[in-house]
Length: 276
Image (tube, rainbow, N blue to C red; front, side):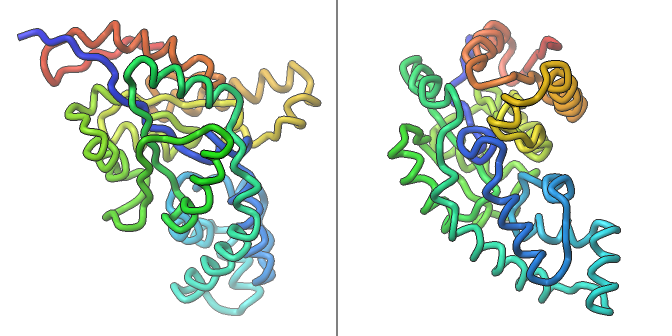
């Protein structure tokens, strides 16, 4: 039996995807938290686990061989779970001190979400931030024009990304019965894995992403050749991670949704994906 299906909801990440161009709020807070224990970590290291729940992000940083060895050399012991808890408290203190400043919507986000709603598409969201953090982010972003219909956070669920539970929470709350009628869009490898684990169409976005890791000013001042190289690297990484599509910015999203919709007259619960 054939059934016509259409995309019913788009589930978006927050920092680096819809707000906080370059995803700098958590990067700065992680750096300051580790500085307090005399362990310097690079921005590149900080960004590697980006997208996971923040306390898990800290565990993954401490598990990196260079950081683990540096911690051991300074503190003359291995790190433990108490260190994780203390670092997380420090991270949250630094994050909350500046979080509201990092809530500007990325280019095209407000216009595209408005357009999607006009088409009857619901806007969901997942994040590595806790509910307490989102209680700061959501009202501030709403004042600037961006507001999803649902926001799931990792606390209160069995696991954060790359587990699919936050996406499942969105599907339940938004009354979307089929995961293949949903799109997950995000700026990190964890976002892509989350979408794939939930069996949704999955899209990576490059400009503004943590993966690209550049501010708007850095992009403006970078040579076109070097920027093109950096964008190509991110695109390849996202496609290799399994993203069905990779877009430069949110402006391309409606076109991609139209392409997906053209595939959705298929057998019930069956999904055919045309490679990009």
